Image 1: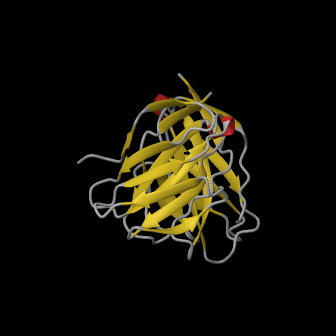
Image 2: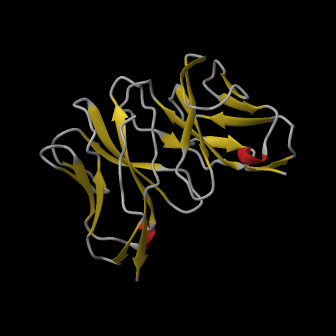
Length: 114
Length: 111
């Protein structure tokens, strides 16, 4: 049973470019959340998708957008990249929106913006 | 969002118990206390959660103060594999699993 998978593993972009990160949830899960983790910090919640709609959003600008597909996989898009967007981007999946549902995290995508 | 406070770092010896404290003095009645940990170069993983009563599972125990303003994650016998950053998180019941991570406690385990 595959867990949460993310692609690519690493990515290098330059300022002003756009990037798309991908996430496949754990088998049977229908909810995907995205987090940004800067070096030495705890993960910060970006947004959460359920039934192909954004359900909750953290304190991130509109440059950060996402999508969820009918097979529950998800994409995170970041436009007009800034140096400060360099971070580990984590995807987590769960079954449903209930607060108590355990979230399973992927290994992350390391984004470097030069 | 309700805030938690944890020590930045702790040390333990292998095969000894470890008590990781967390203060959450502004907790509300419907907030659940969750613990996640992040091993080096991995995403976080769920450890345990509770509301009012102490909880045990195969990984750890969670002791919750009677006034719920603090809790303690207990690893009964630390192993080298338990070296990680441990996060204490309050989950607001009606906010569908949005995890607000703090700085966490970096646990190192000495052989």
